[in-house]
Image 1: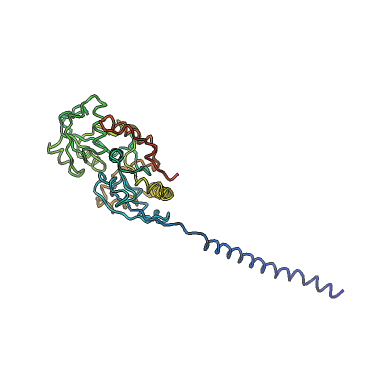
Image 2: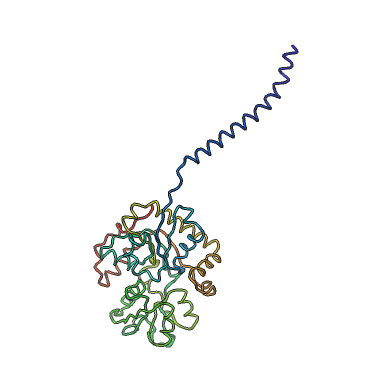
Length: 331
């Protein structure tokens, strides 16, 4: 009886000592299994992407994503090369670059000439509520409508550029004759002085320069891009077609990084503008006044088809292009 009593008294104590020990062993086994699983799980494959970029507000999500490490987090090592303009970039894909920015006229004209490229991601949209491009004139009454530009000299960043194509389309839509417009290529920073001096009669101006010109007393005749559609696709990202189809996962991670960059802009616009000032070299006061564009990184064939129709109306032989084959997304 004594023995039985002693056993019954000791059992709870033994159980109290045994269960913590079993719990500790179980926890160790779980942690060990997790560690083994992590060690055996394949790490995300890293990919180097060669990118041409232009340090302006149009590409701010890309700049922020690069500076804040979002591409790196998503397994992309970005090799950046700064470019002054985007006109000749489509032809450099698959050779010097993997992904580059472009606009619809440059892209579709390159495809029409046989360059094997596709659109992979959107970037910015021009909308009536958020304009990036304005046609500016002197406030002297000499030019008051788009039809008044017949026989006049218009400063453009490029005669075949998206801005000039849009202006010619808008002039025809208002009943004018775009063939009578005299295009003159002028860099954005020099446009205001050329207009003030009377060397040109209108300028196709982009932000932040358009806002500065409004402050100096020049007049806007509106946003020609919106004559095409509202909203309308403005700049976007393209890649070599074979590279894009073989790297859909990279495109998916590219878009995810841009989305994170945009989320940061919306959360901390002040820091995003500081990044733009640092990379562009523009004065902080100028950068602070630049409107942030409307961004959307998805791109659809219909957005390109609108531009194809514009170019066909201006005599470009692009009617046979299949827009569905010109978009490769990460989906």
